[in-house]
Length: 326
Ligand code: TRP
Image (cartoon, rainbow, N blue to C red; front, side, top):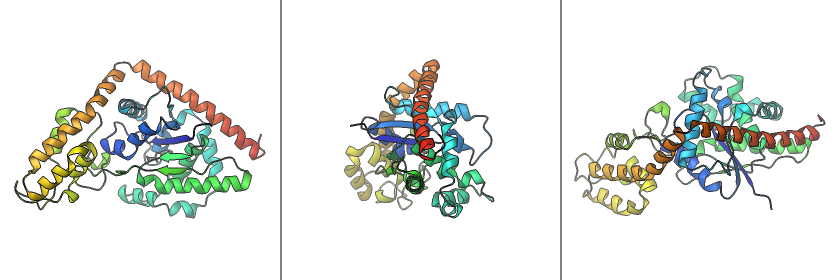
C-alpha cells in the first residue's frame, strides 16, 4: 500500500524558536517515519505581508538549518523552496477560480493578522494566502497537514477547494486534514499567549545555553507570587508550561512546590533552563555540523527541489487532463 502523504510548510522568517518546534516541527519529525512527508519553505507567502526580499534567501537557509538541526531527515523527507517549483503558482491561479472573496474575507487567521500588523488595505495576494497554501498541499496530494492551531482555518479552506475541484472536474485531490499537537501554542517569555518573533518574547532553537538561562531568568511568572514563600499558581505560569513540555518527569513535584511556596521562582527557572538546555544541546551540535558544511545544505535543498518538482509535474498533468487543458 502506498504511504500516505503529508505536506506542511513555514514562512521563512529566519531562525526558529521553541514555539515553532512545539507547534509543528516536533510533529513533522515524528511523522516523517509514518508518512511520505514533503516540507516547503513558503517564500512566496512572505510577500503577502512584506515586499522587502533582501534577506529572503538567508532567512530560508536559516530555517532549513533549524529543520535539519531538529531532526528532519533529508534522506526521506524532501525540503524545498516554494518559489522553485513553478507549478505552485499555476495551481494557485486555478484554485482561485473555485472560492469566493467573501469566503476568504471571513478567514479568522487573516482577520487576526490584519489586526496585529495594523493593515489598512488588504492586498489581493494576502486575501488569497490560503488559496496558495491549498496549492502547496494539493500539488503533493497531501492528505494530512501537521500545523499549529492558527492554521486550522486555512486547512478548512483547502478542504473546501479540494471538494469543489473534484465536483467540477472529477476526483483528483484528497481532502486534507490538519494534525495538531497537544501544545500547539507555546506562551512567550512575557506571558503573551503566543511566542512570536515580532513580540520579541522568544527562545530560539539555536539559542546559546547562557542566553536560554538569562532569558528565562527575566520571564514573567504568576504575579501573585511575589516573595519566595508565597504560594503560586502553576496553571497561570508560562515557566510551568515549559516544564510540562521540556521537563515532563518533574512537573508534579514542581507544581506542588510552587503551590505550597517551598519552590521559589528563581530555582524553578534554573531547573527549567537546565532541562531546556539539555533538550537543545543535540540541536546545537547538529546545526553546527551543517553550518560548517554549507555545500551539503545546498545539495539537500537542490535534491528536495528536484523531488518536489517531479511530483508537482505529475499532479499538474492530471489536473490538465481533468480540465481538458492537456
Ligand atoms: N501558512 C503557514 C504558516 O504561516 C505556512 C504554509 C505555507 C503552510 N504553505 C503551507 C503550512 C502548506 C501548511 C501547508 O505557518
